[in-house]
Image 1 (cartoon, rainbow, N blue to C red):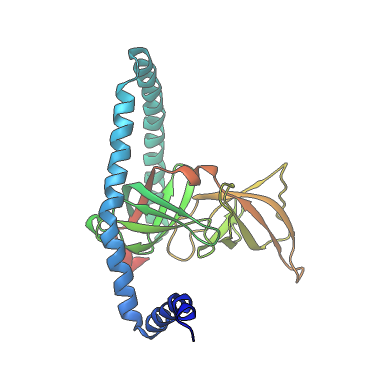
Image 2: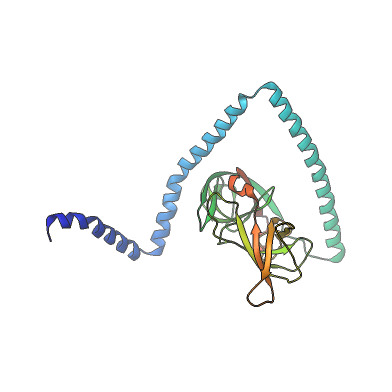
Length: 278
């Protein structure tokens, strides 16, 4: 072999040696290396996140007095509406508690809400994830449900010291027991491959035959509360179409998810107070 051919083939040989060493490395050591790299890069993500918050703060300081007054009036209206909803929610909770005591039913597991800022978004064709700015320091467990004002965001997949990784509801790795709005028969929802710069979507299977949906009349689906992860009644998305599956016993179709999933800045993690009861 000539020296020139050896020089040309040397990078491929080195790459093959590195690949072989990586295959022979124990799984525990690979996992430790991946976690160490993530923790090593976390301060840079934190700094970028805080820099964005500071930039937003100074951009708001440049607003005129009239704009600030209008924003304050809008916030006052929103706070009044939220106050009414809080009172209604408390009344409903009290009614549920009274019925549970009268019927001797076990109480549903309670959650505490942990608000977290989004540090980074990793949107690929086969995985959609968020990195949030809270982790073991806030007591977040793996598997905790994550929601926002529009419904389901996803589920905590990994927890690190000061950050956590959330698998989005649009990710193929996430499956949820769902029901159609106004129905009680559960079926399966699953995320799917979502190309970048498109509205996120998923799919449903095992839908009863008498459930109908179309783009002109979409059907809202919510969490069924089965599986011990998501509480019942949280919005997942809207079924756009349904058709018979191969067996002809059920229907399957496409679900359009909330477009705000691609631009979230804050999410709420539901941390169970009694995880052993879930």
